Length: 260
Image (cartoon, rainbow, N blue to C red; front, side, top):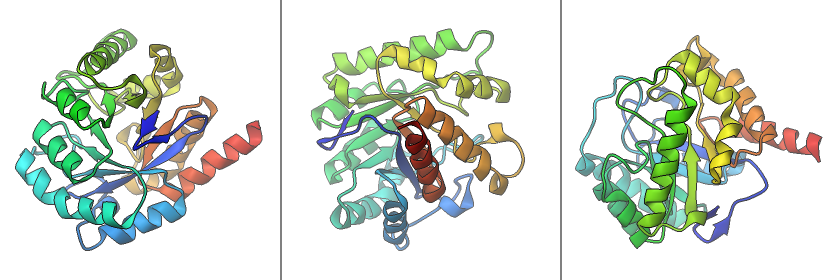
């Protein structure tokens, strides 16, 4: 996959989560314009290959904020990151207006938790800027029955939609959407069979970091998150999106050293 003229392949790379929200479910991930540079510096030092900036919490039961509020939250921090670091930056949004503002500032990728389905202008905006995109599976209602058919159908259709709107195929990755429109049991099933999504022909991003499928309290979910990262590395998943960069980067390194 190409992000900002950099080719990502043949490894499992860490995408570091930087939340610019007051209500993200993991309190320690919340940053602002005064703390963001130190957070990014630490993420890079700990092994992050790219940064994912979010200005809207999408935790269960979240209260949506407008595109204008998102832009107000990420504008200055994003500029600071791009001015001080070479690392590619993804912005987590499902609003085309926010995406355009982020890409104008210098973002390299849009991470859309509605997989280009919430705002039909999103794909055109991404294509216009020759940017990369992560298309995540989501649905308005919790899935029932066989989860694989709706997930595969959605991702296939939205990837085709992206390409038809001018997004280069080598700038697309897919995310099965663990934690979105799925029960705890469905999330576990998806995680354990995640490699099956590779049949769609695109690289994959896995996002499990400290999510509720692991049970228990948020502060106690690092170990199962790292185990899911090991699973991703064994299955050649291209990206893992995590809060705890150092521990997950180390787990990936160990997996690849054992297998090579």
